[in-house]
Length: 197
Image (cartoon, rainbow, N blue to C red):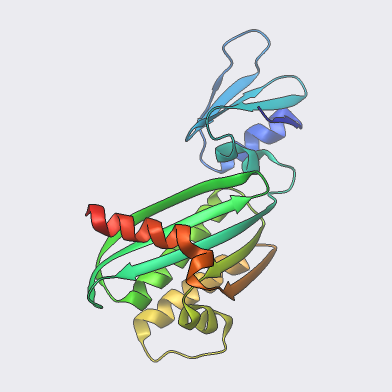
């Protein structure tokens, strides 16, 4: 159970700003409680204790600084265009903070990669991280977002602009192309979503 030394009212505002519902405490000693995912935060006079199966669902939001996350993303399309899905993983010093996948309908592989990047960045933002090191196995997406390569596809240009807007919302970011084996969990999640569809 992580204990975060902080002002409970400041912590309460951070959680409320992130859309987390705050409830009254269950005892006279508890100032308030908040739940998100598999984590529950309980505020006392000068600290907040986070309980549950995945405390990282709340710890990044409660930290004085949002901290840094490693963000992995992958998109998949079977048929190109064909059924598409995305997968993403957020990792902090505490381990996997969050991961997810979903199908996104008929699309191309490149569009799926962009959608995965955008969703991963939105989740990192929603978890309150202020620094991200983003990794993906699509060289095309990484080079386009970083400005090394152009795109003639208006659809991809729109997604590139959205990805840059999200990246620029962080205090610091990096974006690198990595081999598929480094990105295997995000790849696995995207493919599982397609298999389950």
